Structures are given as structure tokens and as C-alpha cells.
Amino acid sequence: MSDWTADRSVAGKRNPWSIVAVISIATFMVVLDTSIANVALAHIAGALAVSYDESTWVITSFLVANAVIIPLSSWLANVIGRKRYYMLSVALFTGSSLLCGMAPNLTCLVIARVLQGIGGGGLAPVEQSMLVDSFPPEKRGIAFAAYGVVVITGPILGPTLGGWITDNFSWHWVFLINVPIGLLSLSLVSLFVEEPESLQRQTKDRHKNGIAMDYVGFAFVALWLGCMEIALDRGQRDDWFASSTITICAVIAVLSFAAMIPWELMRRDPIVDVALFKRRNFAISSALMFVMGVIIFGSTQFIPQLLQEVMFYTATSAGLAMTSGGIATIVMMPLVGVLADRVDSRYLIAFGLVLEILAFWDMTHLSTQLAFYDAGLARMIQAAGLPFLFVPITKIAYVGLPPEVNSQASALMNVARNLGGTIGISTVQSMLVQNEQVHQARLVSELNPLNATYAAALKQMTSAYHGIGAGAGRAALHTLYQSVLRQSAMLSYLQIFAVMMIMVICTLPLLLIMQKANPDKAHEDPG
Image: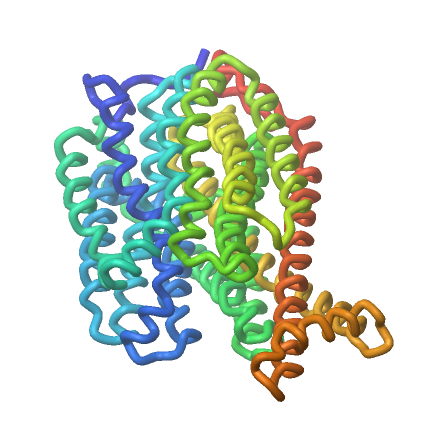
């Protein structure tokens, strides 16, 4: 039978459903903040009298701090106490959000964002471990579904809400909005979430035996994730390896990762339990969660970008087109939660992957004649598949894991999703720029006087501008060139959709080597 026991539940004697909504509030605040600030960068740059490129450190600093703290959250929760660490993280995130909103210059804002990333990074892993400990295996599907609504819809709604706040108020409120939410979260957590006696004993035992932190392992993890985050986030802006900073960061990240694995495997109490990846289901689930991160964050980044760059939507309108995806996710999530406790997780994941493949295939047929309805429908199909990935992947990842490693497993799953998001966004942006240049060169090569179609189009456009006199020819050339830029951008986006589709297709074979999630044999090692 399963090793799960109710004595690890954070709900105490109350119904465990009482704490699902409580612990979801803070995560919604954090995942929303991950994407909400993106649309306000231009306003921040103008208000603080810095360049747009300098303002992007507002995003980079948060992502670096967030990435570094996630794998450490399990160790910190075990040492400090899970509830205490959780509340400290919420308090730090809330306080630093206030500092962000009041920042007088870019330096203060970046420092506050680092604190915000440290506070927010540990929340999701701790919450997921709370859910795993509070619900038996046969009921985790619906619990993860309820929690997943927050995790998935946050990044989707972020650009919409950020655009609306920035357009109607000021960029300060992008951060200040977190303050009342954070205070509400702290109040509810203190009232409803308990620290189980079994975990209190574990924390006391750690202190009795002496707290020995793996400083070397911490350094390797921090250098690996921090330098990699900087390289990926800044790479496209700084021309990748043409920049000495990017090159140094990339080298440090690779060397740190290579050194971290053998070091952590030899430790009795490692910062990152690399040995978990020896378990088949956990390793495959992490890979699938990585792909899901690419899908969620990559598509959330470049679909609104497509609508604004090619279709000339405002930030708010582009966000509204994405709202259909949030609706689809919210509608499908309860259904998936019920199915996850009754249907083999591998089948649900396969169905979700197929939906993503069909969605990206449909997107490869979009054009510059794209209507608002078409954009919303394409996003809806794509978002409808996400619950079929998040819930069963999260559930099947814990098959074969003893309860005492739930916190570590939650942290590593979040690392995988965030890495997927970071690498996905970076890769998409690089491919877009490079492909646009290629398509532009090909299209321009056809624009010469010997091309009858080009000559006729130019003559027709010149005639349309005859009212402005001698400048008609230049105006016609300008219009034609703008059309070329738009077409080359659209072709580049279509290639990205095709690459995403192929990536998802390549993950399907992984399901063939996964083991079924069997609650009655949950503690058996599937490796």
C-alpha cells in the first residue's frame, strides 16, 4: 500500500481542501509577476530616464534570483520549518514589491527585484510538497488541477493585466498590486496552514545534529543557474558569444553544472538531490515539465509579440486575444483533475501532447490576414492542452518517491519548468531575429525592375500616392518595404510554430517508457 499518512497534512484535522485556495494565492501573485512587468518595461525606462536595454535588468535580476533559490527551497524549508519558511518568503516578496513600486531609480528597482525573486522562488515548490503531503495519491489529481489553474493562467493573464494597469494607471502599480494580495496570503496562511508534528520533529532533529550546509554545492547551483539565466536572457541583446560577458557566463554555467553532479551525488545531505533522476518516472516527468515550460512561457511571450509586431495590436488588445487561452485552461482543468484520478496519466499526457501538436500545426497556417477571432481560437486550442500536461505530469512524478523527498522533488520539478521557460523564450527570440533576416533577404532579392510583378505593384502604389507630388515614388517604396518587413516577420513566426510542433512530437516516445501511476504501489521504485 501507499506510504502516505495524514500526519504530514498541513490541514491538520480540517478538510485538506481548505488549504488549496489559501496556498494558491501567493503563487498566483508570483507567477503573475513573472510576466506582468514585461509590458511595462518601456514605461519604466522612460520614467527612470534609462535606456530600454538597461530596463531589461528588471526582468533579468528577478529571473536570476528566482532560479537560484528554487532548488535551495527544499533545504531551507527543512531547516527553518516549512510553514515558517513559506511565510517568510511571502513576507519578503510582499515587502520587496512595495520597494519596487517606490523605487526612485533603476539601481533600487533592480535590488528590490532580486529580493522579490528570492522571496517568490521558494513558494511553488513548498506549496506542491504541501499538496502531496495533504492528499493521498488517489486524490492528488483533482488537487493538482485546482492548484494548476493558478500556475498556468498566471503567465497567460499577466500581459493583459500588466498592459491594462500600465495604460490606465502607472508602472508603479504593476508591483504595488502585490502588497494587499501578499498581506491577505500571510493572514490566511497563519490561520489555516499548520506545521505537522512529524515535520516539526524533523526540523528539531536537524538542529540537534547540527546544521551542515553544503556550501560548495550551493555555490555550484548558484553559479550554474545564475550565469545560465544571465546568458540566456541577455544573449540575444548582446549578440551572444560576440559578447565577453555572455561567453564568460556560459563557460561558468557549463563548468558549474559539470562539477555539481558528481559533488551532489557524493553528499549525504545534498542541496540538490541529483539521485532522484535515477528514478525513471521522475526523470521523464522532469523532461516533460521542461517541455511544458517551453510551451507555456515561450508561446506566452511570442504570440502577443506576433500580434503587436505583425498585426499592430496594442499591448492590451494582444493580451485580450490571449484571454481565450486562460478561459480554456480554467474550463478544462476540473475535467482533467477528475480524469487524472481515474485514467492512466500516460494517456492524458499523450492526449495533451497531441492537442499541442494540432494547435501548433494550425498556427503554421496563419497569415497577415489574421483576424482577432482566429488569434483567440488558435490560443484556445493550444491552452486547452496544458491541463492535460500539468496535472498528470505532476502526479506521476511522485510515483515511487518516499514522503521525505517530496519537497526536494517539488523543487526540482519547478526548476525544470522554469528552465524550459527561460530556454524557450531565449531560443524563440534568437530564431525570430535570425529567420526574419533570412526571409527579408530572400524577399528583397525579388524586388528588382526586371521582375514584372514588382514593377507593376510599384507603379500602382506610386499612382495611389500621386497626390503628394514628387515624393510619390519614395512613399510607394516605403510602403512596399514595410510590407516586406511584415511578411518576413510572419514567415519567421510560422517557422517557430513548426519548430515547436516538432519538439512536442519528439517527446511522445518518452511516454512508452514511463510506468503507470499505481497508488497501491506508490512507494515502489520504478527506476
